[in-house]
Amino acid sequence: MKTSWTALDVMRDAPVIPVIVLHDVKDAVPLARALVAGGIRMLEVTLRTREALECIELIAKEVPEAVAGAGTIRSAADAQASALAGAKFGVSPGYTRAVGKACHDLGLPLLPGVATGSEIMLAQEDGFTELKFFPAVQAGGLAMLKAWQGPFGEVKFCPTGGIHAGNAPEFLALSNVACVGGSWIVPTDAIAAGDWSRIEALAREASQLAR
Image 1 (cartoon, rainbow, N blue to C red):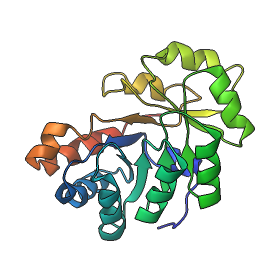
Image 2 (cartoon, one colour; image 1 turned 90 degrees about the vertical axis):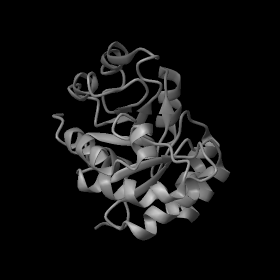
Image 3 (cartoon, rainbow, N blue to C red; image 1 turned 60 degrees about the horizontal axis):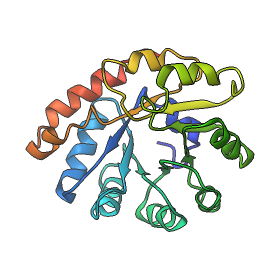
């Protein structure tokens, strides 16, 4: 498998990037294996818990078929810690030049979060053309993405926030959407129960969505 990825590689690998919140390090490896078995290997482990960095490190070491990424990157320090843990890509809920520069300097592909035209323009000025639209549904959803097709036709988006199995196909049908982000394929109750077969099944369904 490749050892380095571009942001576009990350977005095009599968129709869905799972947004993962892990509270117990013992769940990291079996969860990653279940997702990979279902056809999803780009894994966004969010930095929302104290265990997140250790989980990224374990996935990177123990599940070579997976590509561990770090979500909720909000600072240069987050980016540095994620890269040290073995993350191969980063995702941020918003965009600052400090985060963009840190990821660029680290060679860490970043999907910066945007919700407005001004944020898209700022990210583009810094060389980012693959962006996370967040929170997608709350910030205008399909209508906003369609409106952006004109002025930002060269930008590819990963809408995240309010995306689920029911509306994902509508988002994936848009020409400026490369993939979507969502937590529906990693339900908290399935993780808590260690129901890896359920997660594998959800991942398989997601990996087969048309785009």
